Amino acid sequence: MNLASYIGLLRAGEDVLARSFRQLADGHGDEPDVYHLCHTLAKQCDEHGRRLGPVVERYGETPDAEPERFHADAMSESRSGP
Image: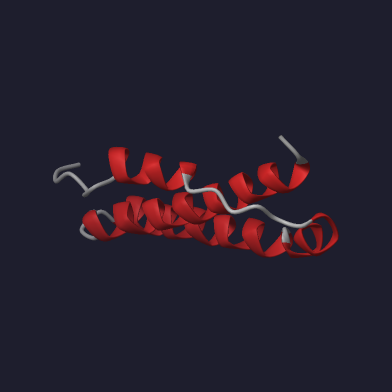
C-alpha cells in the first residue's frame, strides 16, 4: 500500500467521524453537553480534513470507502435516552 492510500483512508475517516458526531448531536438535542461537544468534535474533524489539503496536493490521494462501512454499521441511527 502506498502513502496516497493512507491519506485517502485518513481523509475519509475524518469525514465519516464528523458526520457521525453530527448525527449523534442531532439525536441528543435535548442534552446540551452532548449536543455541543459532538458539534465541537465534528468541527475538529472538519479542520483535520482541511489541513490535509497540502499533503494531498503533494502526495496525492486514493479514495477508499472502508471508513464509510464503519459509519453504516455502527451509526445507522442515534439511540434515544441519555
